[in-house]
Length: 399
Image 1: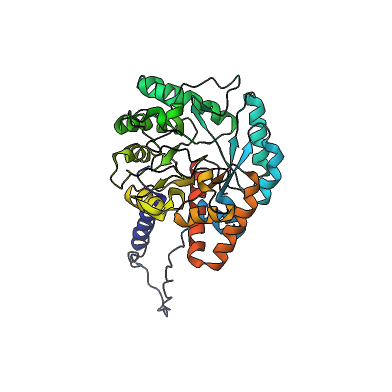
Image 2: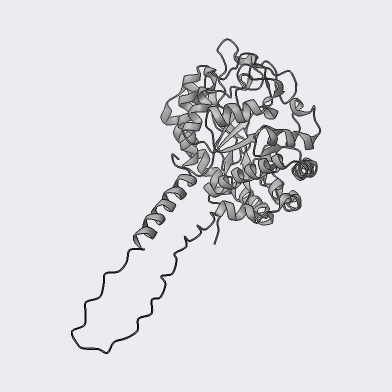
């Protein structure tokens, strides 16, 4: 979308001012009476002063205003639930007022069964949930049941016709939307250099990339984003600022490092293209990028999340973390501090595949916000991004 609700509100306000100005013109004098009339004493009644009508708050603001600090902190958490048995965790969803759930694992259940489980969990939430999963294709496909055909890998799709990529994406998204999934943690926007290939453990080894040329990956991402989102499932560009050149997997190692990436890196092109295509979300990796930030992994880096993604690339949507629960790359801090560091860096939604992380992460966010006014403002801003995404998905309605 080219125009934000801020610009629409400004236009509306300007129009109201013009109408108010037009309405203050004095009425034309009435024609003089032709019949004689006794003299009368005229009392001048002051013209009421017109006071501008206060603009009603938008739905996101009204919803945010209705949440206390615990409710706002809860909106910043997306917790992993087992895809085949998510209803067993519905109590935690309500207790911590979670903003989203991630369906983890693999399932061959039918669509009707999955739809019922998701609806059951949604019914327990205080606000409608973002429901996410990994349905990339190839080796990374959460749903493979009778209603969810096997998807080709991104590498294969990227090498084929654009029409096939578009049609495959549309069909998959329609199937997901039909069971209540509204956010896919895809597409992979990482480009893996041809001379690295399978030596790149997180992406290349599983053929998760659309190609080795950032320009070709950008073209594929530009096709995938509208194909999925127009079919009812938001996309997540991952893993910013790129995992295509690392030689270790962040899930199993603290040694995933891209020593090449800079703010002008051509490997950022697929992310920029996806942002331009309107992707609702971007996922931040937990690898290290010393030329961008020598002190912190990307998930905890303000120069990367705020400086590069928000300010330089202009992304205004939902910023979500890669897994900060079980991933070894994030394990150098206690769970609660992982959440605090990500939000402080500019992130909006903390993803953890460990359900028990909800308690310490929520508590840490609340505690820090109560002690630090700047962080409290950041929590409010992050919650607003989550709520805007829900409104855009049609999940948030105000009477």
